[in-house]
Image 1 (cartoon, protein in one colour):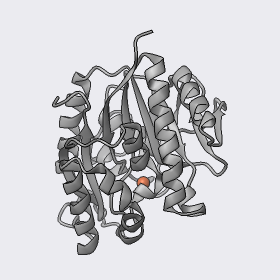
Image 2 (cartoon, helix red, strand yellow):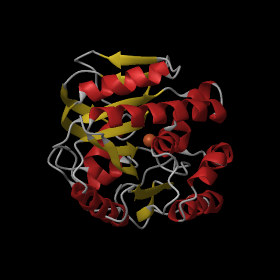
Image 3 (cartoon, protein in one colour):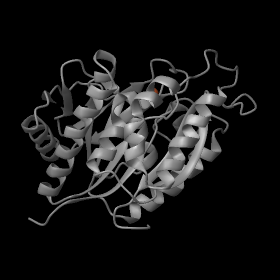
Length: 296
Ligand SMILES: [Fe+2]
């Protein structure tokens, strides 16, 4: 079998607002508009990623939270309604997704060999988390590729960022190893925002963009620092400063998604393509990708 590869790795955050504002047929609530900079950036990235002809999407979501080890969806298909627990007024999404179970099993086994506690999730009635659904929707709206969905085992919360990164390193290397063995072309998605302080009150009209703005200058500066490092290919610096970033910007990278992505891609030393940066209820979101094969 030919060697598989990671064709791109993207930071693909999952604010439900971005799906809401685009009014896709799968989502029940209707919006007037909103968050155009991020949505149009996502559209450009999706077009570039499609041109790389991936066979499968591998996504790690902060909102599939598992408490004993890392879990992987292990049923060929899931179809149900996903309702955001915080924003049920914005996201009631009818999803219908296919899973690449053999690749999920391959990553699961490779991670176990590297000492991680892993488990395949075999419940056909399981409700897929909205982070996985939103990142996949925005990065590949056609839903024409199978998905491997990986949980966040919350080791930052249970231990600390160093433990999270040690596990992310093993999980990333296992992901790469299993993709290469599969012969497939994989697109990786880290489904997290950067800074993550957010508003505590919603405006009467959620898509009222006169109310959307940066929440805090210090966390904005953190986002700019990380994005600058991404644009200069300095991903090992991002890795090394992760404890400070997570603590000071309350970053959703605490989930391990970004660390996993960097480890799986063997710490890119070439620039990321940054498609957009913007806030959603004050959280900092960057839409960006690294393409090992060069410019798309
Ligand atoms: Fe989130």
